[in-house]
Amino acid sequence: MAFLMYFFCTLFNLGFKFQELLFFGSILSATDPLTVLAIFNEMHVEVDLYALVFGESALNDAVAIVMSTIIETYSPGSADAFDLHAVAFCIWSFFYVFFGSLLLGCAIGFINALLTKFTSLTDYPTLETGMFILISYVSFLLAEVVELTGIVAVLFCGICQAHYTYNNMSEESQQRTKQIFDMISFLFESFVFLYIGIAVMTSNAMQWNIIFIVFSMFTMFLSRALWVYPLCTVLNFKRRPRIPMSHQHMIVFAGLRGAVPFALASRNTSTKNRQIMLATTSLAVIFTVLFNGGLTSWMIDRLGIKHGVAVTQRRTEEAEELTATDGGDITPAPTPGQNPWDKSFLPRKWYNFDAMFMKPLLTHANPTLMETMPNCMRGLARILTTERQMNNYSRPMTSAISGDNLTDQVVVHPESAKVKFYNKRAMPL
Image 1 (cartoon, rainbow, N blue to C red):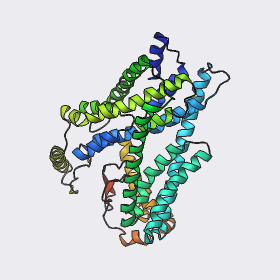
Image 2 (cartoon, rainbow, N blue to C red; image 1 turned 180 degrees about the vertical axis):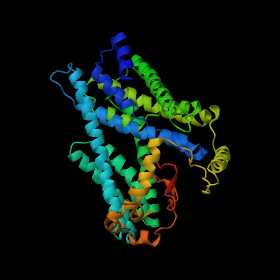
Image 3 (tube, helix red, strand yellow; image 1 turned 90 degrees about the vertical axis):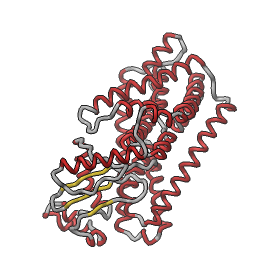
Image 4 (spheres, helix red, strand yellow; image 1 turned 135 degrees about the vertical axis):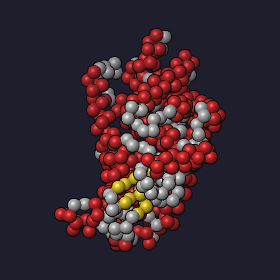
């Protein structure tokens, strides 16, 4: 997007530097398809499409936050000296900050999972819920202290906690935690959009440039399409099932902008160009939420994307075909919202590693580490295995948590060491 905007700004002599447009492109890369995902959930759209839109949004937000921060904080000797050295510095800083924040957030999430597994916090639901929330905030604070990105750290800490810690909590704490985050999410989203609307009408920190706004809207949609379609084409070489064109069109259409771009743009409005960026970002948020969000249901029907009863019927037929081709392997048929036919190499390896090592280590899931680790490490495996796990020792197990969360339903057959995975719908954090 920055290159397209630089071309237009140079052509019409709008007075924007390339460094400023890199910052502008990075903040508008962050998407917030909350409205679209809510409609997906209500219409029971295929879970594969839901996961693609949600995952792309989460990754976009993390990358946009890190990139905009690095570009903004880079201060060379002169404002015009954004050379190759600066670009190399930004690339190195991006990987350092992004993966550092990722590892820090995951580490804190793992620590809380171990705390809930090996302590009696389940006897104190209020304390358990409080720990879940406060430790997530600790990841944000710690990342800021060590000069990483707190938002990215808390994002991945939340993902790890939803995947592991949530499984260790008592049923009462799970319900409380889900209700609290649902309420917080609703309140803050409502406040942010209300604030954006008021700011557009009353703020003195905005300046309007019609030519810049028109080019920004055009390049925002064009650059998204130029990334989504080629990436989906590359993924389809190995991915099973392939991403159909209807899903690709919907992913492009679901690129709503929200709180993250507005927050990043409003951090610095000291110059005229920054004030134009803030005004353009605010208008982009309002337009995409009203236009794209309002037409989501129509677009789903227009593209012929299956939802509701059609998805249920399709999943049943696919499950029957899978059972027939597996030589009579009797595995519980997946329910709507599950994906038994994703054969990608890396996801399959990660799911097996997760089921055989990570979940037995961080949760009460089976099979236990005593079954999956080498015999030479049996003593350590016994220490890391709880009595609750021992009660189900060496028995086939289904690990699933009712309700919407980030866990995967895992069906394990210890006698054949065969693991089959069914992806569950993700809960927006």
